[in-house]
Amino acid sequence: MRPQVRNLSKKELVWLDEHFCKHGQRYLAHYNCYLREQARPEITERIGYLDIEASNLKSDFGIVYCYCIKDGDSSTIYRDWVSPREFRTCLDKDVIRNCIRDMNRFDRICTWYGSRFDLPFIRSRAIAHGLTFPLPKTLWQTDGWLISRNKLALSSNRLKAVAKFVLGKTQKTEIENIYWLRALQGNSKAMAYIVDHCEKDVLDLERVYRVIGQYSPKAKTSI
Image (cartoon, rainbow, N blue to C red; front, side, top):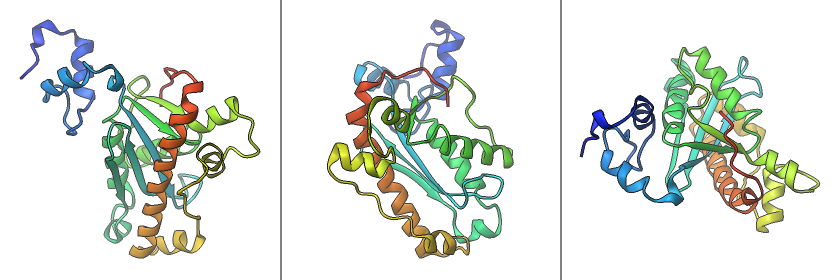
C-alpha cells in the first residue's frame, strides 16, 4: 500500500522518508509497515544500541575499526568493519557510510559515553570522508553513562562496572592492546576479536539501559 500523499503534510512525508521499518526499508516505500508498527505504542520510538571501536581516541589520528547497533525490538545486530582491502584503499569510509545508514533505521540511538566519544567520532569521520551525518533533530540520543553518573552512586561509571552492579555479571571482553595494534595491519583475526568485543558491548548496554533507563526520562536530545 502506498501512502495517500495528498493527505499528508510535508513534515509527515519527510518523516516517512527518513525512518525505516523492521525490513530496513523507508516507511515511504513500506507504508503497510508504518501502519502496523506505528500503531503499536511500545515501538513507536525505535531504539538502537550503538558502540564503535576505534584505532585512536581522536578522529584526526584514528579511524573507526567497526560498529555494532543492536535493534531494541529484535535480536538483530547491524555491524560492519574495515576489511584488509579497505585499509589499503578507503580506510573507514564504507564503514562510516554503513553506520550512518543503520543509525537512520532508528528514532533514538543509545550509547555509553557516546555523547562524548562515539557520536562525535563518527561525525568527524563522516566529515573527513565527505559524508552526511544526521542533522540535529533527525535522531535523538540517550547516553547511559550520563544516567549512571547522575542517577546512581557507584565507584565507577564504566559499562563493565555498572553491568556487574545491576546485572551481577558482564559479557565484556578485555581490551587487549595487541589486537588493536595488529588490526592496523589488516589482521583478520585481530579484527574478529574487536568486532566480538564491540558486539558484547552493545548486548551489555541494552541490558543495563533496560534497568537504569527507567530512572531518566527520554529527553529530546539530538545526536
